[in-house]
Image (cartoon, rainbow, N blue to C red; front, side):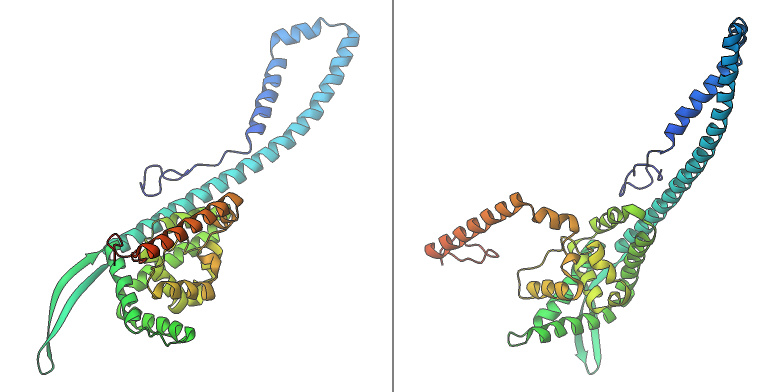
Length: 325
């Protein structure tokens, strides 16, 4: 029922099968019977029947009268169901059209987002010279945003900090980062919020499906920035309630640097583990076959680590370990 071919990003959505097809079949049969009894041939055959048979036909006519009342009731119910189904189809069509429009505007916002690398050098006194060194747009810009945020945190991350102090560093750093780029990121976050809110209020039994469509368009960098917004930004007020309900950060990947585990722990503590793992994936991870494969993977990785240590190779897979130390 949606606009076919309107957007190659979301494709064609299947329309629902009408529930009133049974009533159509009953109506066809009933009107066929009425058409038959009005034909001259049927009346001629009826006039040649003996009297007892005519009396039976009279009783049959009374029966048809009862059936007519019953069919009228069926017709009324069928009309109500057909109207309800039509209204539901129109409502869904309007929902899909609005959703597609919101998603197209969101993608337009992503493409129009820029990140500039500017080098600033002092030229004397309070005077500075600024020079543009690089410019990024679209998804590349969001990657640069996430990298600047993470590097700002890592530069100030101290080993002797407590876990609470590290969490405080993430929150304070993000607040300063967001104030710097609020004109570029604020509109983006608000669009995502209103899309999810619209799905939650109008998606009926397809809410999870449409949230998946939204989530599938977001890169890892975009998901990470959204996570910070949900924890420390404007999203912590009204948006965060949707994080766990719809697993908004599903499949978000974390770096192996010192900040990665801290980010994951903060999301678990503030948003809940279900924000990262959807209900369907939780069921898949509980499957015995999956757990068996995970156990085999653990043994294999441990065997590789022991081999590298015994052979004198580096166990840091972020660098080449093919040459002995």
